[in-house]
Image (cartoon, rainbow, N blue to C red):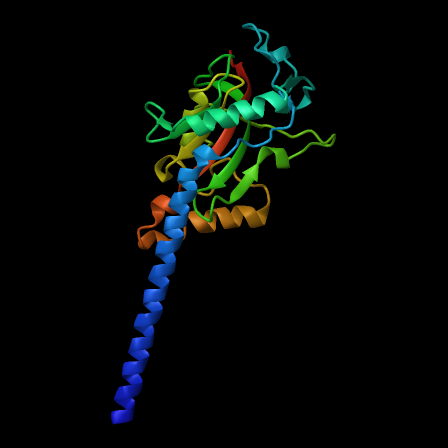
Length: 246
């Protein structure tokens, strides 16, 4: 009987020790994730390749039906050279700070490069390039449009219609606050991020897509109050072009 009690005591002691180690690991990971988010403003922007595909120019009323298909256009928008644009953007990021986009539900943006073109609105069709990262997993990059290329090797931009509800709300809010040519770094809270697995943009690769949603919708960690860390996503977005529907 005495041995049984001692064994039970040691078992309970071991369980308490294991739980303590688990809690320490979770606190450490959460601390690392928070540090990762805070460090985004000091990181250099991604090295965007020079040629970027663009949508056809906005057509006049009544001529939209004759406009060439989005997927068939071969026009390009040339960015500034890496020697001048990237150091400027990096310096801007280091000196700037994140500010909340009005009426966005808490989406914050850091301007890496200001645009000079038009500003899109509901009903506009837009083409963007992006780097998508998770605040969790030390800023794991889950997708990038520059990983998706056509038969000629050109990166394929992500095209969607503002107000369609097919993309996460944070992306729409960010794009609606941009001008063509702009490049902000956007931190999107869970409430404006992925609410279900059908929302775009998502990685085309099955493994990365499963990893993304398994992390965001992890039931155990959500129950432990880690939803704000798991569901926060970070996008570097470049607005390539817009076209107004008539």
